[in-house]
Image 1 (tube, rainbow, N blue to C red):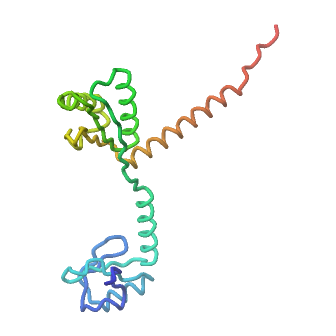
Image 2 (image 1 turned 90 degrees about the horizontal axis):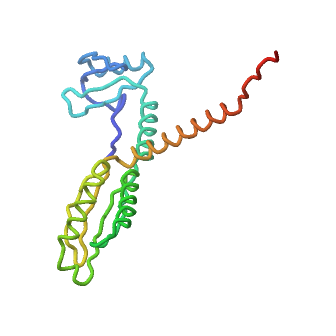
Image 3 (image 1 turned 180 degrees about the vertical axis):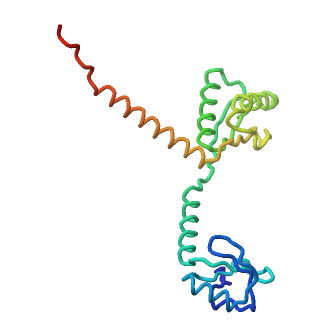
Length: 206
């Protein structure tokens, strides 16, 4: 079935509720009068609500409307960024330096709008102490709470314990902010270069 709306003489109803080109309500008119108004205005009569009684039709430039709709759809697809799941692996008895390094990776991923799958790997006797991994995951979640939230609570998966942290910012927002920051840095750098190129005036000789 076609998803295209009916236009002009393809609209086969005795009367329609007509909307003007600027959104103004004209009222219920016969299809003949509506088509005549469309012809006089050099516009198309487009059925915008076929299930209404009577159907709602609008006067518009249908070719221009289709073009603008296609451009908006393309822009939306271009801006739609797919969320990527990054993975970080930790040991239950991780040392403080390694923990800070791993946390830094999580922070970077969340700032970029990516989800992070955090995996605690248990080895040997560590498997009998799952609370160590649980506390570590809780600590990490609290440390990055400004950037992300726990999307999937810690759960045991064989020898591992897994938790997923989702970003507060969407991928598209993160990309836009990154681009804006880059542009600002370039602008600041350009301003500094210009100020350095201006030589101070020499004092007049006495």
